[in-house]
Image (cartoon, rainbow, N blue to C red; front, side, top):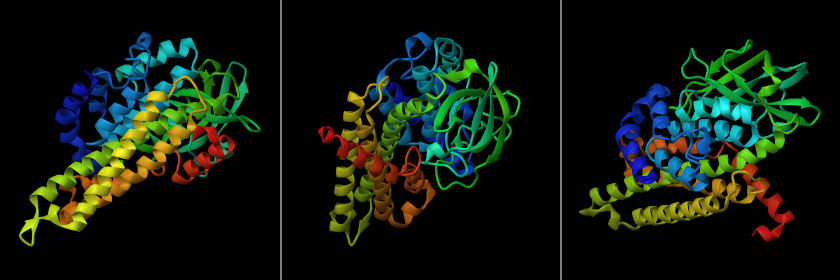
Length: 377
């Protein structure tokens, strides 16, 4: 049922609008709310809060399917559903979950995650955003950068965000910060992006924002554990986006190889083209198997599953970019044109080698984890 609903949603509603929103660098808020109506914003969320409680494999299905048409829109959905809502489901208390998750699952609210800063990316422990306890509130000061869903448009903030902030030397805590809290505002929009242009990316500014203690996720200082746990499912679903991109590029490549003729024969008969198709297919299938195998074994409430998630994203993100590049090469001049889709997917694929953990971070994590415990091989 999920597969059928996804297929219809993508073909009828996602695909027709994708190119236009990429060109204008605008977020399709109405389509996002439609995704909420169909249940795609709460795939991993408990039925108690309006979700489907279907787990990691279903989440992988959703992001693979949507990314074959519009990775930018898929990124906004993933950020909201996994980095924000799933984060709250695992790390929030009952009161926060009852108040926020139904709004997130329905699409009435749009949420995001605030971790990256202007001078801090992978080195999260060096973050400069601070949260100082003052009675029954925390006072947050700092700036977050490259925040997906930071705004709905250039005038309007997203509704709520999970925000990581330092609460002492080596201590990180996480909080839910909501639109309307004094001192919380939208900064500059990150315009003219290479790819993922249909997701709204911005700077967010926290100027002595007073956040109730009740909006803290878990204990003070528990933010690092919450971050690591959420990164595992984030990286797996980003890997699924890569699989969706690779599949669409392969479809376009094969269709063109069947139709296009040179030297009197379809170009599928040329050895150079055969190599692009065969190697792209092999990488796509290998990435898809790795992603789904990891999804079948991942426990959304546990931690310590970094090896599978990092390996999936490390391999799939590179496979997606290589497949998109091969598709452009097979199509030649047509591949360079926007109407043939693959140039947009090539641009979108690049972010997946950076966001949610760089290739270099995955390499470091995998080497560290495997050398410490070779039984994970």
